[in-house]
Image 1 (tube, one colour):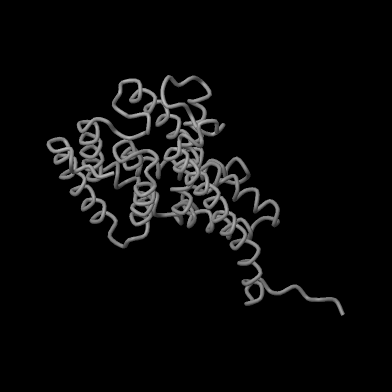
Image 2 (cartoon, rainbow, N blue to C red):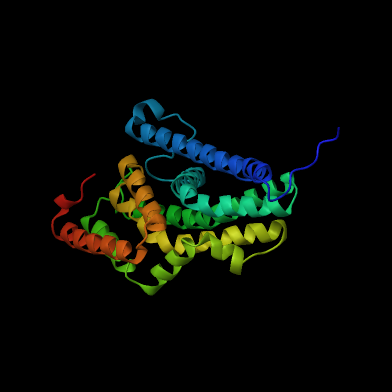
Length: 273
């Protein structure tokens, strides 16, 4: 006897849609984030064991960067942003996966969801390019050490004050609201096709970049390869996305950063690596 396809509203159909549409995307996000974090762990180990990793093809030189060194630092920033921001992008990508799976074939839904993810990361890749150029300039100006840590209390203080002040701005809260609302992408920004998927991811990634770029710039103050602060900023960004009072949390964080920045500018001992 031929099997009868389950009704789209039946429990078995919903379970199949969840398994085929959401679980693979969730597993893919977890796998990609895990690979990115493994890369970060390796880079941190390399910075702490320069004598053992001096010949590594993945490590830039300490000073006098050439084109290859800039490329390596750019890759480092891009992978680091992927590791830190993919968890924050998961709600959007899972929601898109569910929607695509209800509309398209399994293969097309997977491709469209992947392109949305690439669009999201493309926005952060643009930030990574700017961060690479900023790090190069700061290194040449001797404001950042070859170990990728701030060597200027004033630079650290200015970054913390700027990041703290930004937490109170309308632009911050507008971007945060957009970044926290993946459902608004489906309701207000839906675009058909593969290009539309990429554009939706890119636009949402741009909002999240606008929300968090100064928080990411704090890595210049704390240490670009400081694993503790990379993890701490990742958690901070995630909390901004999921806590029920985002404005209050962002402004509370901003107040702490403002005070901390003022203390560092006057007393460098308050910057703890």
